[in-house]
Image (cartoon, rainbow, N blue to C red; front, side, top):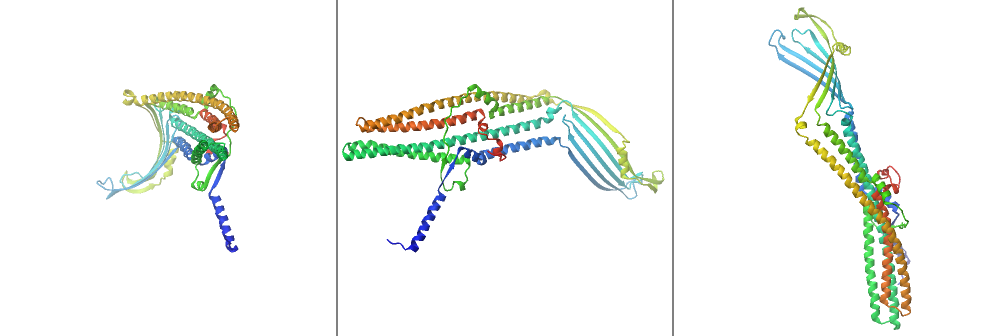
Length: 522
């Protein structure tokens, strides 16, 4: 059939466009292990959630420190009052009074637990009441007061306990973030090597299927030339079908591991769209790592996140116990105050003493009252001791008993965590040592399986073996190849798990907390 040129060219363009579109919508993503770790640090949701906790804990430390910041207060009062006069001593018709007051005060908590307050105030009173000698009158005052607990709530430990506990909580949240990142990194490493294994296993299964098909083709030729009975080909056909089923299972495992990796790296829907496969570029290494149990335990006791958290929690509970013990003491307080008042105003001169008509004034101003205040003309002071004994601290010590119980629980929890860490480290070291030996053993087994199959195929060619035996040896070779691959993967995962168990996984991978916070480079 002849296609006109003007139709053939657009058709070719459409075909090329469709091919290009298919290439764009179905793509593969090649990743090294290091690239996966970088993606996890930036995108993993568990890490993103864990990063927020230290930020909140840092704000709690800041809030705890704010108790030592001074507190300022200001007051302004204006009042007018009017009342009827009931006596000629008050005023003619009604008594009018105007009052205004200005005040300022600063209060601060000192490190030993005391409170210092410094305040100033100035008031003005203006009235028409009969007999008033100073009107308007200005009253000003400077007052300093100090209150210090001497038993309960006394000392640096009590006043700074909230700050220390907040810092401990901040340390715990940072260590917990370290643990979350470490666990996530281990999951990525484990998932990556599992993906590598599933991909390589799929290759082995395909190679096994290829061998089975080649063997089936040879048998079919033997049947055609009459050197093999038709019934003898059934075993080869069955083996091909079995290995095709094995490929389906291997492909499903690849997809499952790809999905796990996508979840850990938090792929967006846009990134997943059109992604056909993830190609793992790195191959597992097989290098012996010598480590003694005692050495691993010494490192783990220092760096394991759960042990560090348990120790900090024990410190916090000891602080709570000290506080509860302090609260059993009576509340003995020392209180002192000093006040310097000042008075001024306009003096009124009557035609008779205190009564009659006002015949003159001697002006006075508010500033004169302040001269009295800061000249300390009038001194007023007081000191006092107050003792408060609560019956709850004498008859009941429930709060202290609770704190003591919590401290004991934290101590036992630390010991339990240490025992669990020892067991985990021993198992991890043993797993590494066993995995290393298994790799060596499976390498030998695979090499022998290859030699056995080659020898059996030669025997079959000479008529000294059977199809069944060759097929069995093919299965043995496939099994040996898969076992060798799995042993190398398991060895690499065991090494990563040992680092995680010791708390050194991030350190050995040169990963810092700042990388997860976006403040550093990988």
